[in-house]
Every structure is written in C-alpha cells, then in structure tokens.
Length: 113
Length: 116
Image (cartoon, rainbow over all chains, first blue to last red; front, side, top):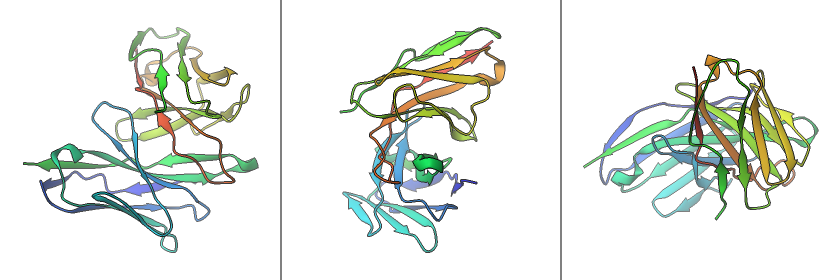
C-alpha cells in the first residue's frame, strides 16, 4: 500500500517567520522525492527535488531521512507569496519497472502581514 | 519551459454522456499521466502511459479509459459519465524513468468537469 502522510495544517505564520513541514512515507523502496506547491485552484508546480544529502534553494531547504522514511521542508523568512498548499511527493516502484508518484494530501501554509 | 495543455478549463456534461479530455505536451516526454483531485482526497492516479499505444491502470481506473496514439497526446475518456466523476482532472508529463528514479512531473492547468 502506498502512503504519504502530511499534517494538513493550516500553518498560520507571520511574514518573516521560519516554518517547517514534515512528511512520512511507507515504501522503503522509494527512490525519488519532491516537494510541490499548489496555489488555490491552480495546478501543482514543482518546488524542489529532495536529495539524500539534503539540498537548499534560496529560502527553501529540503531534507531526507531514509532510515526514518521522513522528508522535511524548511521555509525561512516567509513571504506572503509563500501562502499555498505544499505537497510531499514520493515515488512508488512498481512491477516490471514501472514507477509512479504518490502525492500527499498537502499542508496548507498561510502567511499573514 | 514545459508546456502541458489541456483542452478545456471548464466542462459541463450530462450523466451518461461519453466525455473526452485531451492533453498535449510539447517537450517530447515519454511519460504521461491522468489524475483527478478532490477535496480531502488529494491527487489520485487514474491511468498512465510510458510509451505510444501503451497504457497502465493507476489507482482508480474504473469508469475511465485512455488513448495514446501519438507521443505528445494523451486522452482520457469517461465512457458513461456519472455524477461521482465530477472533479478536477489534471494531466501531467515527465521524461522517462532513469532506472527506478522518477523525473518530476509537469502539470497542465486542469479541467474542472461537472457532471449533471
């Protein structure tokens, strides 16, 4: 069974705050990990891939803990434009080499002035 | 930039109709996917395709079929639309897998389908 679990939130934070989201996944064979953001009534958009060593892109830092099957996203110096739903995405290796992505239900972030 | 284009942003159909949702991508991606997204349920995979004329069932294929006659086009068909198929439908594409490593998927704008 493929599962990706996220706290649905909402996380309400003031501008400039640091906020962290967590995600757990059930399939120990998963190899690919991503964070997407989805604005209200819009399509999901790739925010960043998550690498084993952890990676940073400006104000965003993603970390992966394979032993605990846990992924995190840290946002520093939050902006109003960061308000969105953040989706944790994990691949699910399947039969005959097919591998699909499983999307978490998302964590909503609301950044206020 | 990858462009995934879905034929309609909003669509209203009647129960029992055959409905076609079209998706075209312009990046020569091998893989294409159809999802539906419902409040509280997240994105759920309906069908996917890793090559022309190839299709695989996702998690919720019942009531749907797909067609991939050309690499750039992936169509979702609701054989006989029902009210529980009212949803947001999202098409995505990605480059081929590298071993078991998935490439990120790029989404179209989505089609909000209402079945009356």
